Image (tube, rainbow, N blue to C red; front, side, top):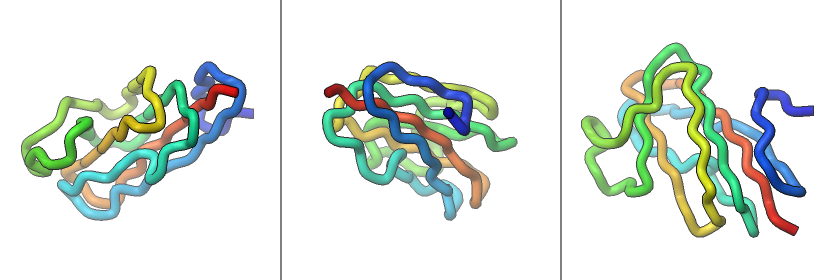
Length: 102
């Protein structure tokens, strides 16, 4: 079963969440990438907008692309691709699902 309502493609699936403990700080989601990952889905179930980027060196207070509350992002992303998320409100959670090729 899929506890967060996201069913990515692939043979092996991992789901989880990352808590954005501090406001305006980039967090990698997931914290470590699944080997042979082929697909990544992020879901913002918090009541706050978040922002995402592939580059965690940009400003953590003004940078990133909007990831609205209730929004879902889907990436065809191998294990070498890192995705970072931040929120202006501390303590929010970003849920994820990633799938792995055989």
